[in-house]
Image 1 (cartoon, rainbow, N blue to C red):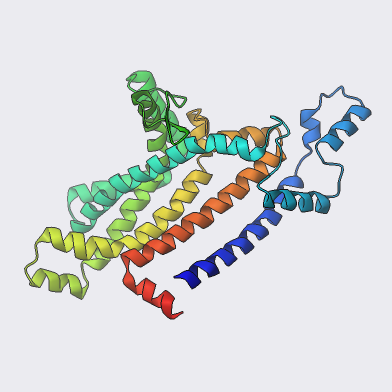
Image 2 (cartoon, rainbow, N blue to C red):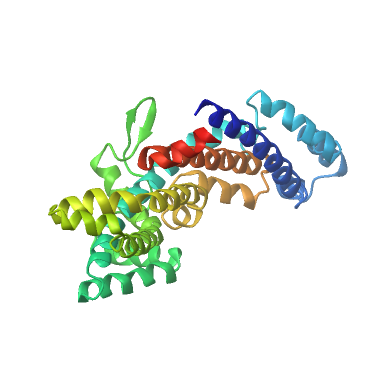
Length: 325
């Protein structure tokens, strides 16, 4: 296990370096923030002063070298707009995005896996066909339209839930969280449901296909022949064996949820990282954009590592295979 972790860490360092190069070149080659940040009536002297102040007077390779040097010290640049460290701005918004993404993933697991299990055990029942038809909607409907419909129904017409904002928060571990207050939970429900819609459908289909394949295996037939209860057969021999692909996909979807919660945060005015990156793109705030993308890459690496380690707990054969390697 130690050798495996060292190898993964070395690979992660290489991935972060390559992605930093791609992200830096891609972002810094697009647009000119000076045109947005400086008043149109500014003279050439003011423009040159602003260019020097932002560090844009240096060649691109030198800007990247300075970025890498600062990044190794934990400094990912200073926002052009807010004049604050970009990392601090993102970390201030990160709890809101993490709270939203984790809640959406929990919704997907709690709703999707039981429905997929039900549809897989009784594939010809009317409710199974209804579940699978509903999962198609989750793949087909765009998230911004679903969000608008949720606002229209539950906020405008019924008045049950607030439509925008994060609501009241409470301190836990030095961080403000919405789920600790009733008002915060009411603000959290709709954006989390909107963000989980696709994930629920994915969990349903993954679980159903895994169940349909697993119940035909010999060890499941043998367990039934031994007289084990249906609950034990499903819980121990079926559900446990279908969890590896589910954990794989849902783990990666957690990273995607964090990275691409932009639409949901924009629709519901959720003050997370996604809304910050959209605002930064509008004004070409390059340090914030680069810092955001680098943090997302780092998150994906951590999530992939956690998913791989979870394999060894779900299936001992994965652990044995790694030790032999």
